[in-house]
Amino acid sequence: MTQPSHPTFIQIETTLACNAECPFCSHATLTRRPRRMEDWLWKKIIDETRGLGVTYRPFLINEPLADHRLGEIMRYIRRDDTARIELNSNGELMPASTSSASRSTGSAKRRSRSRAWDSTTR
Ligand code: SF4
Image (cartoon, rainbow, N blue to C red; front, side, top):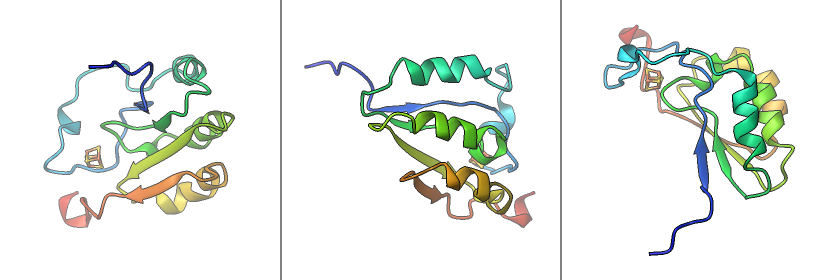
């Protein structure tokens, strides 16, 4: 079996913040730290994978729109013409975050979890 020379997808959990409490999710039980990835680290990950045609997903078990740096992170990724960005969001913070984030996404793929969390689960 041939090993790939680099990852095709990279998920970067820049924060542990989330505005939801989805009953099926392990987010509420996370104990790992730090809660916020330092800027130098997410920049290092992106810098070391530039030009490789990577699809970056700046989230893991968190809400990407809860990180106020999301626009900056996406602009940093988009300095690489071969890079793609995918976001998976619960969408609840979209109105407040859309303006700064979407301006910098270029062709970023946007998708939202389909209302996995609503006011009845708060
Ligand atoms: S929005 Fe995502 S990270 Fe947050 S609780 Fe729901 S599934 Fe987990």
